[in-house]
Image (cartoon, rainbow, N blue to C red; front, side):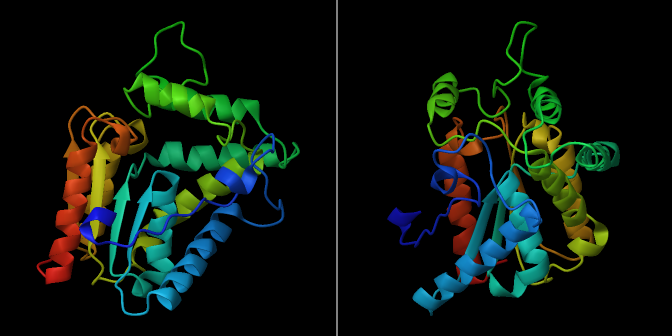
Length: 263
C-alpha cells in the first residue's frame, strides 16, 4: 500500500498488542462495553488522521473482529470515511450468534466476568478449528487461521499474543456482533459508501462463504454497493495465505476505482 502512495495508519485494538504487554490475559474496565469502546477508539484515530492529513480521503480496512468493529463504525460514523474494506466477516446463523451471546450473558451472571472463561474459549476455538483438526489436535491450535504452519508457530511464540480472553470480552464481542449485523443497524450505513468484502473459501468465521454471501446480499438489498471477492482455498487470515498478493492487488484496484469515481 505504501509503495503505491497510500498513507497507512495502523493501531493495536484496545487490550491487544503493546497495549496489553506483560499482562496474563486481556484486560479492560469491566464496567465498559469493550466492543463499543473499540468503535469509539476508531473514531478517535480517524479524527487524528483527518487532523494530520487534512486533504486526504480516508478508507477503513478491518479484518476479523476488526471487520465487525469497522462495520459498526460505518453504521454510526459512516459519513467520516470514503470507502470500507472488510475481510474475515460474515453473518452466521441466528442460533450461533444469539446463542453465543446468551451463553456468555448467562455465565456473566454467576462468574467473575473480569477473569478468563476456559469453557467459552474452548468452545469458541473448537468450533472454528473443527473442520481442520484431527482427533489428536490440541484445543488451542489455530488451524482455522491459515494453512501456513510457520505463521501459526510464529503466532504462538509471539510474546504480545493474548493467550486468554475474559468472559466480559466474549460477552461484549458477541453482543456487539449481534447488534452490528441486525437489519436496523445495517440500515445506518450511508448508501454512498462502497464496500469491498474479501473472503477465504475455507474461512469458518464466514461459514465457508455462506455467511459472507449472506452479508453481501443483506447490504446489497438495502442499496449499498458491495464487491465480494472469494479466494479459493484460503482460510481466515487471507493476508498471510498464498493469495495475499491477489488480495492486496484487489484492494488497490478497488481503491483506484473509488479515486476515479468508477463505483
